[in-house]
Image 1 (tube, rainbow, N blue to C red):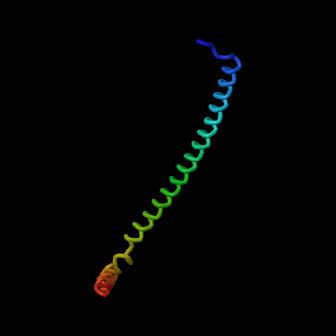
Image 2 (spheres, rainbow, N blue to C red; image 1 turned 120 degrees about the vertical axis):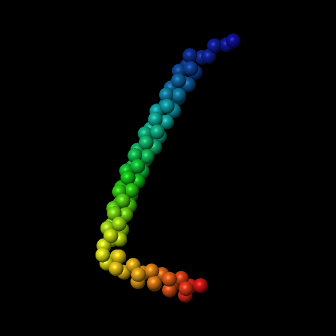
Image 3 (cartoon, rainbow, N blue to C red; image 1 turned 45 degrees about the vertical axis):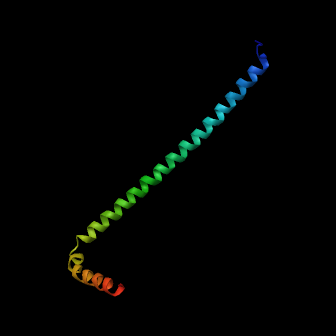
Length: 83
């Protein structure tokens, strides 16, 4: 069995190290994008929770409760006219 040339082995090792470094950079960029996406998702989730709280507060108001029969009648009228 013929042994590999020392220069060839060193060149392959150098190329492998370069590839490892390139892949580490790509992985770091992907991690950064993931962190940014997680932050955006958390901000959107917080905004959604604020909207839900506002809707709950609105539905608990007296005016919402008083106008319920009007809204119900109007919805019924819209359903009848759409058929």
